[in-house]
Image (cartoon, rainbow, N blue to C red; front, side, top):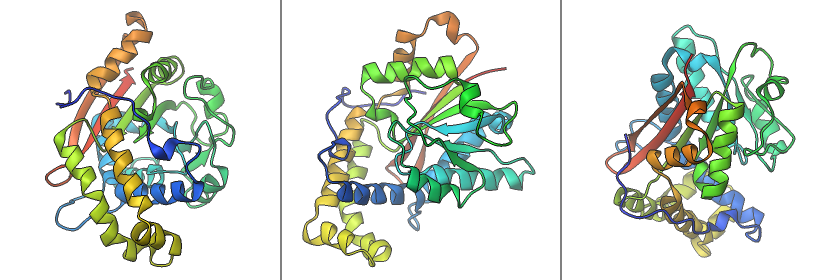
Length: 293
């Protein structure tokens, strides 16, 4: 299933990616992004986007969902992965199945943040050294320090991350994935369509409403949301750019085939779709590719 888009893809810059953007403001923008993943607004949201990701994983992968260790290859400070892990493993336990493991990695490791996350869950670990998604270690190396994963395979996760790669970098990431992993999942909360732009436009008034409930104890959040509203501005501006950067499933496939010979893709299954998380305009867009037995 391919997405209907209104605009051609453009790889304009996002402010939050820039080295000159102050780290203290970057962290506050990331706080809002995490809230967007993990919280559920009454009436208009039947589930949070993070819970929806876990549902998609279990539905699309079916019984093979427990065959993988899920490596987040662009974890940042942790993002939605801890919440995806909670929802997915809760569902697996209810079905009498074993827990699955998640591993946080990034080209610029956030060790202190990851260590705090790992201490809260036995199913989350991290690699403290830099991991380049275009030149990742072998599966044996990646799995070596993850306990209890004998005979498991590697599934790469890109949660609101794949659109950050330009075409050349994205193609290299996909090529390396085929060479060193057993599958990949791309999850985005936006696309190049009108619904996504409307959703992003609503983030600014949403920030005005929710900040007192989540950040009343943080003078920095209050200052940069209300008096000097840099944080909601960047949240919305970068959101628009993310829409323009996001690829359709067919564009992901085209990049994959541009770097990987057809014979190496034999036995790989490609699926995609979209699921509503905020009625009627907020959607989760996903692409999942895995090597079949």
